[in-house]
Image 1 (spheres, rainbow, N blue to C red):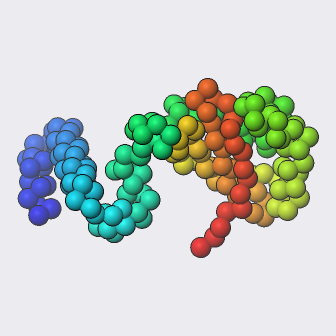
Image 2: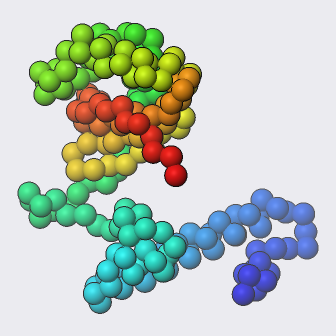
Image 3: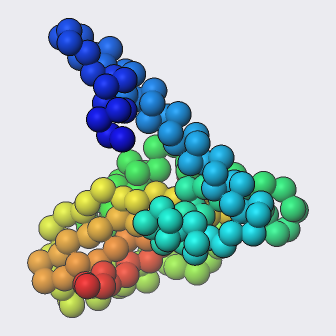
Length: 187
């Protein structure tokens, strides 16, 4: 089967850009077929577990890729598009935390966060993490997902003697609706 598909895109010429373009078009068409089959499976009662197993992913990953979440408050389809530029936004919040620029972080809080977490409390929480695991060494690339009214970033953090995840929830106005530093579980 792979040889047949490859024969449709490989050529005897050196026009690799054209071959790659045809392969990408075939990939997009295959993705459309998978999406249609998943939708048909759901309409016929297949569970997300069955679909995830067939795709080789968890039921949650299958739902996140192919599902159409409905807002229970309105019955309307939910917005699943993450906030543009949110990865960079999360990185800047983490850099401000690591540099002790507490006011720059709390200035980004939405009203509920401002009421619940003062600048002093934020500084104390970061100090506790540093006290447990040493100095901040860096962060990785965030995973980004839309959940209801917020975009959530999960960014790996490396400290001298411990690994954490910074989970930051952003509203569409780019304010922070949630900020958690979680100990990363090792497998």
